[in-house]
Length: 389
Image 1 (tube, one colour):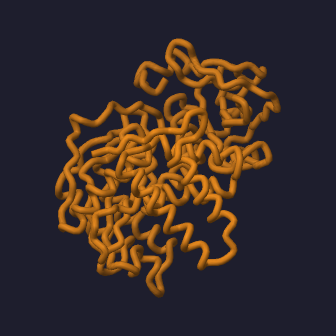
Image 2 (tube, one colour):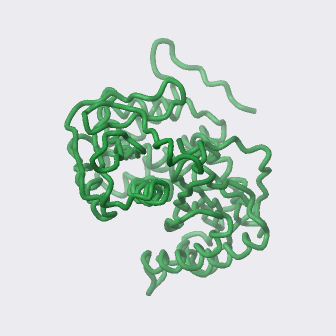
């Protein structure tokens, strides 16, 4: 039965204060011996909150530390993620982790998020075990290719899924995901899909192939790209795709977020080349920063050279510790020029985070320094699905 958590009147709850105390102690620790004390306390406290589905307490502690103690915030965030993706099954003989294998995809049509056929699922497991996972590791895979909208929402839901998949890994089974229960997914030109699994390794043994002598992450990625990518291609018909190295759940998600930014630019340039018949050299890109209270993201508006109409746009969100001092503009311009876009304009203005009142899509910068709706020319949109708008 879930326990009722009583918060102190006018202040933080007792459980929130305890998390703050433990995270602060770990941040200030001066030795590994002391680290272990704080880590054990955090593990116990966080596991209890995850078991009680107490997302609010976890969020309150993170919110408090974000503004008051960045080092303690990082320690607590890392520990919550670690405990959420580590399945607590009561089996002390194994380390059990939730992992994700992200796939970046783009298409002029809808990018599927659907059930994975048994034969394809079996092939994916073979290649995960051959190229990504260490020897003696058991794996259970969910038979669904998830969109970002369909991933677990919050740490507690993530821990629950880790437990379901972790128990299946110990039992040598896979997990069926009822597709009719999955929420609708938003359609974008480029997006990420996720293969989710749990692995069970003997306690203290290697989990991933690159932990073993003579192996490396780059080698594992190359083999997974070739073999796993071939297995995933039938699940994404009509899509160009690029696979991200499978990793622990939160690390893989962050890597996918990072890699999706240049991928979305490359996808947009390729899309405009086919939709408008305009090569990259015939495009112009306008980059501008967009703020709420702080800089939140850069947006890139695309026009044809010599024309002012913004025909398409891409959002480049800031991630992690990135802020105004991070040279994202140089990164964006580098990707554009690698794609063959030679005319790049940077607008050094403070634009607000504006969205279309009618359809909710972001507004993009124009060469005149205005924020406008991206609109494909009418003559070129006859065969382009409206969901790309």
